Length: 267
Length: 252
Image (cartoon, rainbow over all chains, first blue to last red):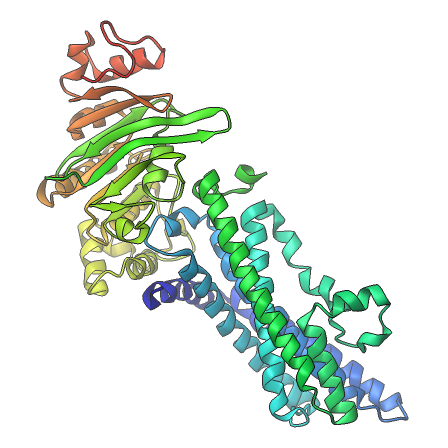
């Protein structure tokens, strides 16, 4: 694993972003729109709620962190899709580039682009809606770490799916966060779900994060054990996703798919 | 002197079809070897296996003493390729593409090397042009410049002059000949242009159904089989009639 090859993958994405406002804008635009929409909605809920349940901070904070996970995932998949769209696999994989270096390049790109999005989210949430993360204190770091690892895992797994099924499978990837969100318990506690959904939710690292966030804002309680479980789950999913990607890549090398990758070749 | 490329018993099977069937050949330093055959004869499959993007069912590929299956990175570090069906990303400029691939190959003094290949391939004026806006001829030169970035010992060229005009094609042939003769590089070249093969290649391998049907000097091979030109010999093979006095698999 060499730094200069990983840097080459990241540099390619930097060149693409630098030269294309249509690629740069979505890093900030969607997160800003989400925060503004949910910011006003939660502000309204706080105004009409007589009980002062702290809805505002809990909901807006949850939206922000869920958006962060989505941006991490999309940071990885977008970087991968650039190679799908430009049919660049043969050029890359007929070089000394190792598959691990390629994945590492996608991950670093995902980290950088999601940090841009995160900065935009925090700025809008704090400047426009006065949201402060002080209530979460240092707990915010493990929350974000878990969501970050889980977002990377989803991004790598989504990329593996597209590598296996072809560019036409791209549409399967975009809705993944929306499909998972009911199980992530972003807006409600886990115990309101039916039993079968709770079982799935317990396999989702994100659900532990949002439960822990609610515990802090509503009961001022820091839940260590659930966060440890979430961290273990997210790490396991990340390792699993990397293994799946490598295995799909090896299959593509056996079948010749890498050399002739296109929608027509796969489907 | 050991060959730069040593292919032995290479086989690729897709379902019931043998795309490449126990193929063995060598390419030496300073030599340009033409890999010819009809569409589907196994040329690109062979090149893809040498490049490590397609796994053979059997056989061994050794580049500069490195087995591609076991020492892929070391083998590909001294190899490069240019294929008409693998253009560089059109949304990056010529210089950006060269920098990215230069980093992947860990080219020392990269900026100087980029300047050198830009000048050598008459691309200096296109350095800030996105590859998607280049003509076929210009794109072919960019692909060749990329292929030369790491000063490879083995160059694989899959139809490098397809769909470009005769002047550009001549330029490219001149560059490749210079690479082989002056820099002592080894070249494996596929082409359907028999005139160019005759002009450039030191030796040709004619593939049919994944096997070598004929091998020899493109300048003497036609006459040896009673044909006036290489094209006439190729067409006869294409029509599945093996030339007089030759059994399939026989070497010249």
